[in-house]
Length: 195
Image (cartoon, rainbow, N blue to C red; front, side, top):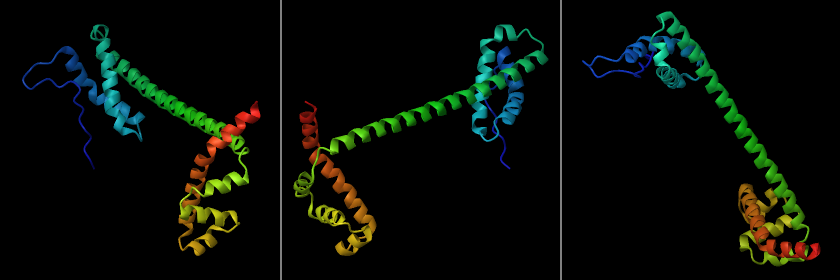
């Protein structure tokens, strides 16, 4: 079993007496670790950060806190530890929600873009595609022409002597190149029809 790490938030150099706050922090560090380990099951790597957060809040309140009795200080630290943990959980949930919303927005934008692209390609005819095929590399052109003839990936693979995966990759690249080759024509025709 691994030994638990010992937090060194406020360790004065050896032989140098610490301030009141350093003494307080060293006294309550084990208590804070015990409380936060119970909260942080599954995310133990965050315990040390949370202890730092609690002690920072204690330091900011030290002028009031230093006059309290020890049991009140301990109670206050426990409540602050719980609040720090809950704040971190809320932040994590908020970040996850923002990420989810961004992904949904991105997907929505992609759907809008796909719809615009589909509308764009209705301005391109069969003759345009045949002309554009002449600009593809021989391998891409052959693969795409066989696909247009209705052949399956497996049959194209046998005809061309490559794997079906290679056929899929070639068809993908052929489509991308054809889109680029035909984009200007499609956009020009869309503008003309829009007048």
